[in-house]
Image 1 (cartoon, rainbow, N blue to C red):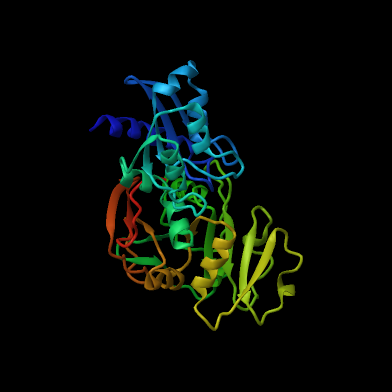
Image 2: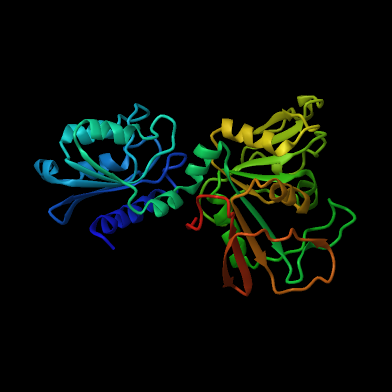
Length: 361
């Protein structure tokens, strides 16, 4: 590992501290080094607050040392005025002679402008140190910026012989088959807390009556989404209990009055005669939703897989055999990671066409 890689690795460790607070901004870490010694560190703590470079520079006790230092930052310094002033301008103002950048920011208002601003000021700038790791760290942000849609995670649980559920005749009266242990159920809630939105279809809403909230892990419940083409889901479902915001996708021919009086519920009318998933992706992009967890049934999950609108698949396989029932989707091809937890096989598969993946969260 080179000297630049060593300090960039430290930037990445710092950046991860902003996992829960920085979104929808990216996680960023910064380190100031003077004569082989770290004299300042910082990371982006929360959206709207000072950026990593600002926090790192502020932490330097002897500001005069900045004129003979190198600042390492995992993501290109911003060059525009947003909720905070441009970090590139601060670096120029402080007279820092060298900047090492992990990866370029694809956000349209940055996208190389920060690096150009620094170089025009005569600063020595190196770009691309541990670039792959820096891209992976913010894979959701990167996907959102480059693909103009959320990072999509598909999740389901299944039996060892490949069934998602028993066959049921009445969606409302019977409960879904429980594959998770109390511990792996907690992991499900942690996964929900790491996503901004969660989607199910009409059949899952009726059959499972899920609340789709975070109860077993600290964090904010995601925006709940449900596909309800005819607008006929009953008001008594937990999706409409007001404990979290819910967004219902209904057909353009259905009157929005079907959902009047439901607390925290909004409706979006789509053209169900066309492919629905791209319309949902466009709606979420407009809402700046960077991560979507899909917990629907086989039909919805397979729609995402067939259309190639996925970045990660999470499967929990329980040590039971049902013999028959609702078949699980076929696992897609991609880089797979497996772990045995509480007697269950947990599998994560990352899309082979995605430039980003394999990081934690």
